[in-house]
Image (cartoon, rainbow, N blue to C red):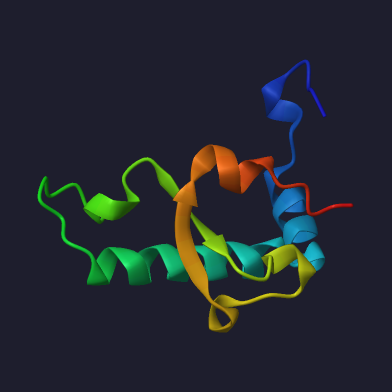
Length: 89
């Protein structure tokens, strides 16, 4: 939804819609999975990410959009492979 003037954008309303859709809960689940992997992995270059996660995504075995959670399991996968799946079909 492009805006001619960025000041016309209502960020508070957009956040309320995200909460209503449940997007915030999924975001928190993704953050928890990333942090769990970063906590257990080695970080040689001290940038806050585990070395095995550098340039990769954390993929969930059962997609969060289909009702999955971190309890269902997650693993590290390349960005291209993780983002190429279309879970909307």
